[in-house]
Image (cartoon, rainbow, N blue to C red; front, side, top):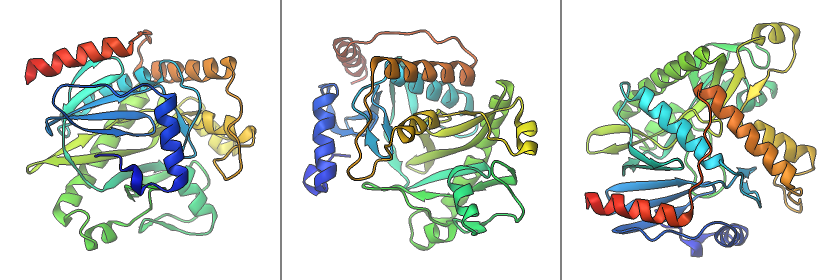
Length: 331
């Protein structure tokens, strides 16, 4: 989609301009028909048929893009997503066709469903905050009495959200999705089946790595009558992991779980007085802070994939040249 800057609220407009100034320039690709700049990804539409997704080193938290990029973060996220897309293609076809560069994926352009399928295996995060407030239902799904933070649900629950173009995504129930005509009933039932199957596969792979896949989200689209899994999958930016070793002991003692996710960035910001609220300033991101975050992302990669991370440098010129050659070869 295009970014229509004339419809952006003033603060979002300023953030958008700052993002354009502080981040890399837009590539000029053959047969390019659209361009969308997200908080982290730059997405190019080619001939209204293919998508080129460049996963940048930008990092966001509390809906704010932080002022300094994190070296190798884009490579980490892109390569984790590519590995899991490959590992789940027997469950549902996905959008990925190639990974020509460590931080770039090329794939099919799909008509995107306007909901995100959030699936939770444990009472943590947003689900726990809802539960702690006294509610026993989330997105129309009942939650059992007598649970404590980070307890496992009897079976995973699906708590979908709408996909907001501006502001925050909103919780929504299965019934409302169908009633509002956001997704036809039969197709939504299929999305649920895919979601649970993908989550089961993700949990199985995580267990082999000594991890627990706690919760995650999936996005889907369509080409004709075929449903495709799109975007990223099982990355630390879209998922929460616990370490398997010691989970039961910590839970029995009421101790916090050891997490493997982007949460450490949010915690650093909160410890330094920033939660994205009006009037708050992003704390200084020193070289030490930036390197520390980069090292943590590399650690995440190695735990989640079971592979040694290999740093690869990709210049904007290299990216332009490589992608131009690939697109021209299939044009």
